[in-house]
Length: 466
Image 1 (spheres, rainbow, N blue to C red):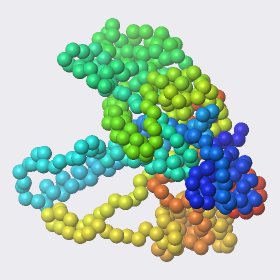
Image 2 (cartoon, one colour):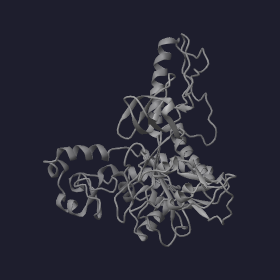
Image 3 (spheres, one colour):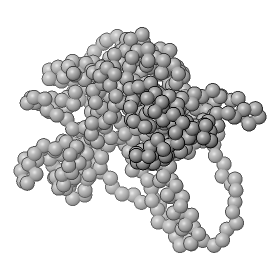
Image 4 (tube, rainbow, N blue to C red):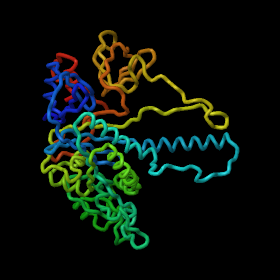
């Protein structure tokens, strides 16, 4: 089964053209009619002027707390798909660590200072950096796709999570004000929380029931923390037994469920806090923005018989979803946000306040920067061979290259050829999608091009990614 993801095409004046099949792009490169412009997402630039009627493509976005699905869809089918992994929780942990270190240092090195409250004003619409990073990641990729393809519209899933109803489904009256979050389906939340998997047997392709982990007949409550996802067979086998009784011979599963069911609704809170900010950012592009609910996305995916994944959910967002979509044969690009390494450090004085300007360090040597994806062809020495991967640079010119399977140390810079500049993201490919296939998993940490046949030129080696 071949990969049906399209290759992006831009004209000589950098205007986007219609994406083409990988075979068409390969032929254009072999005939010297185009050159490789960008590796991820793979893009070619034409050497001659080309006048074609651009399609009306639509970017569809399924935003999430940890992963966001992206799909480029035409009036008839999927053109390109990707899954974007955020680093919001890593940012939150870093900020928490920094705050603790600063508090400790100030307590040690400064005189007593009376606490001050509300002495800092935040701008209207302010969000923490851990949440804004999710919005900025999506904004970055929407802008990139608009430069590489003739995008005419955007669709966003506007998810509504009723976190108060999730904690206590029986809340009512003055205790519960009917705002815009009213009416969230607890079942959908549990499906996401337990990854569409039975907590007792691990089944995924069965009908699910909502099971009271501690039975109501023995003092259990209706709180979401007491609800788990269970297949029909396990639910009937458990009946009104206590968890310790039903899982007496599987204590490892009991401990896992206890830990998982008590996790806070931080994912739902992150999506709630960023959904309107993301809508505002998307509308600033000047393109019409269509909003769709989570229920409509699930209805479209079920109607089209598509497998459950982030990118297929994105393709089904909104009323603009075509009447037929074929996900078979697509290999989405897995994008992971890694940061740009732009943290600035200063030297403090004895009171803990900055006394110098931020440290400036050289990050680029011999035209390469740590994180660049390179191809190194070593022709002599102990490391003869061809290596693809990310490079770690040194001032001496002796670089390390991290491939898919190993880290090759001490490769001279003169053997390195740049394929893709570091842009704050790492890339890999998901498995080829099949009908009723399970959720996609990355096939590796990095993309390693494979030569299908003996290459005639460097361009053939680069296009062998497809």
